[in-house]
Amino acid sequence: MLKKKVIMLFSILGSTILLLWFLWGLYTSSSAVDTPYKVIQKLDEFEIRQYHQQTLITTIAKDDNSAFPPLGGYIFGDNETGQKISMTTPVMTQSNNNQTEMSFILPQNYNTKNAPKPNSNDVTFSEIEARKIAVIRFSGTATDSIVKSKESLLLKYLKENNIETIGKTMLWRYNDPWTMPIMRRNEVAIEVK
Image 1 (tube, rainbow, N blue to C red):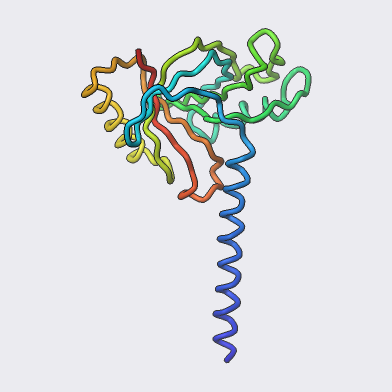
Image 2: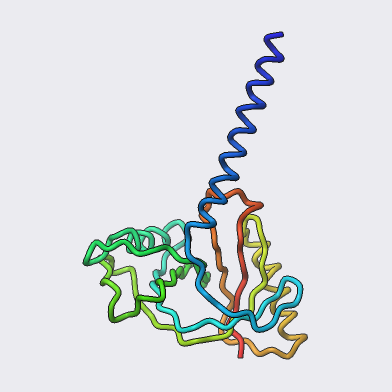
């Protein structure tokens, strides 16, 4: 009898934790503002989008865990005015030579002239002109092998459709690391002509 009660208690506890984790994913998915874009072409999991001009804050670090704090600090008020700035998605990363370049897109009402200056020398600003981006979307954890696989599929699709690429691929993530993997939105992206 006691064994059944313990099993039932753990089942209820486990179900409650899963429900809270799921609800956290819903909450965080709706709390960040997606950068606006227009879909130009869509086929299966591939999209080509048009983005307006964007202002980015960027840092370079040894990995994602080291890259996030300076950018997160900036939007959470570690800047010359102490101003908090809304989080936008996606968080963009590129890995090169054992380094990670991570960028946040500032909300549309900011540019390099009116955004508060960062307190950290590790945070830089840049303006990106309007551009077309091709993406392949996937859920789950963005492991290196999954990202490489999606990158290969995206580049193959673009080549087969005679769509020229510009630069290197990027990993775009839309959720925090605590969101349930099945609820995460990730994309491999590359600029196209």
